[in-house]
Image (cartoon, rainbow, N blue to C red; front, side, top):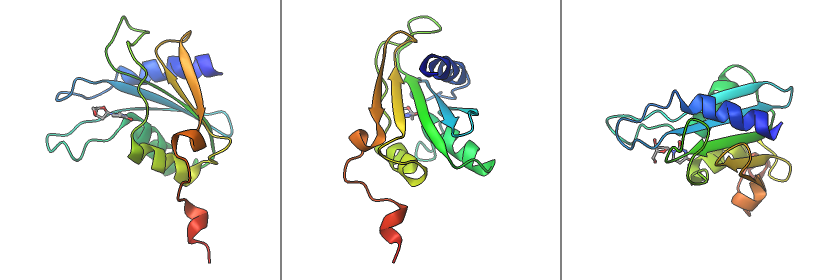
Length: 139
Ligand code: THU
């Protein structure tokens, strides 16, 4: 499953809109029912309106009624051919918090990959320890 998700992230990366940074990122999000939702980063002339690949995938899914997720694969950075990048692209803080809104920190897995053979897997709670989430607002 990890390999399939990484391949989907490389596919999504092809659609990255990055005229400013030229830093192309692709993400592939696996829902609880096995659907793969792809996302790319989408930059903006104002810079601040830029959307990361991970959030594109999450917002696509949630806006289609999908709210339960198992893992996400992320690929980004300097290209070394069509299926390899030079470094791991770890998700930014805002994207980690968006993951936290919909995912269980212990069981949701974040894969950062350079290729289908070279990747790391983290639990969300390792990337966002002591997090604030929906349950903190329950009275
Ligand atoms: N970016 C992502 O898509 N995901 C991340 O987690 C980090 C950053 C994008 C945003 C921007 O288009 C470019 O990478 C440089 O920051």
